[in-house]
Amino acid sequence: MHQKVKSGISNSRKNTVERKLVDAKNTFCPGPLMELIGQMKLAAVGDELEILSTDKGSANDIPEWIHKVGHELLDSFEEDGVWHLIVKKAK
Amino acid sequence: MGSEKISVMVTSDKREQLQMAAMVASVGAVSGNDVTVFLSMNSLSFFVKGADKPATAEGPMGTLIEEKNAPDFKELFQQAVEYGDAKIFPCSMAVDILGLGQDDLEEYISEPLGLTSFLSDASEGQVWHF
Image 1 (cartoon, each protein chain N blue to C red):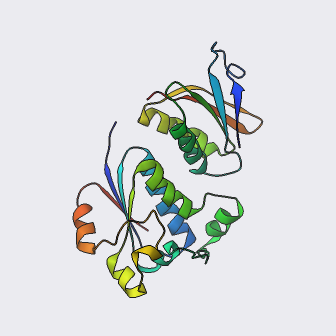
Image 2 (cartoon, one colour):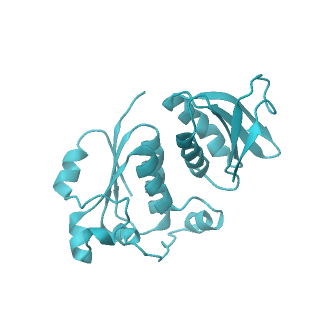
């Protein structure tokens, strides 16, 4: 399930880029990573995506993938057992 | 970005083994590595179109994988191909023994590959077996 939400709700960056929400709660590694990649394929360079995961392993692993592949991790935080990772497609 | 050759041989029909193989292949492929998967022995029949026999668990983790909604191993193999350009080859011997044609296997499976070619292809980089 994906929906467009305005950026800036959960971090302090001021911009008007639309952020796509990728809800990957209640699945396990590497499910959230694969869902993110599927959405990244559809996104344009500069787009922001916010992935939600209840899997702590994925919360640790996804930033590793972001760095390896060369995208940008804008923010990450946990709220009520859900990890939020905000990624900018850099290429 | 460091790119490596990763070769994965899969022979098991157990859920844990298939899951781990699919995880290595998919995460390896989407991280920019050149991934080749070779399906042989008891693993191949799961990739016949319409095959719906679930893989049996070899231990408690296999049961939990299914109960807790871990990604399906076949879906992960498909994502390895679609998102990471992995190549998944059926072993030509296993294809012959099962009497399969190319159209009998899932669309994301490449044409059959012989062991000689796989071993040659796998001679550099990491090799994993499940």
